[in-house]
Length: 206
Ligand SMILES: [Zn+2]
Image 1 (cartoon, rainbow, N blue to C red):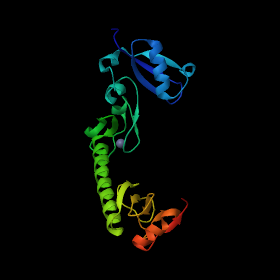
Image 2: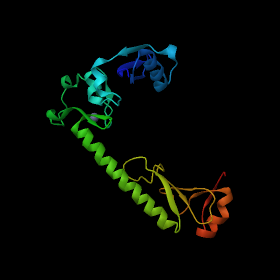
Image 3: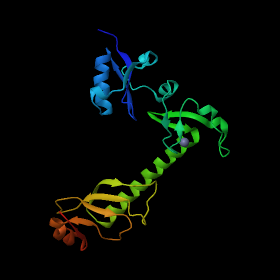
Image 4: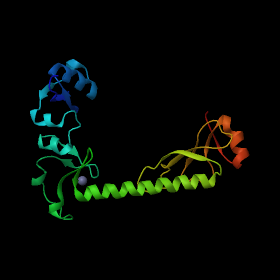
């Protein structure tokens, strides 16, 4: 068996990827597929011997940063690259905290950003459970199948936070928008079933 080697495939624009393959032609084809361009649109397909040790991937983000890649911080969106140590220290943070932190394949500019993202994820989970509980209490017998919480807490004013649920006698999902009182969006053909179950509901195209 031929050894698997690391190649960097770049489309000349915003997209690039690291591919592990036994030869350049395969790497180019697989890389083009991954970044969504045609074979002939690949700007370069370059060997990256320093990354061979990570075959078959994924390459840890910090190893890619060492190779000159950069990321957007998963929390504040700032640029995280190998020059970060030269960045102006933020007076609000302990300077020793600044530096790339990877959590899985997500990169943060500092421990503070990683911690804040984690805290927000936790509170979003709490908000999601609260929304599920609210809907299942409001519409007895319903089952929430999916929730969309936009921020990291429920916000009645924005109308962003949605719960999709099934209810007894309904053929389709109904949708509850947080902050909309006791009504829900129900398919035309489910109006009667919804009214029978809850004496409410609003029309929406089936
Ligand atoms: Zn950050």
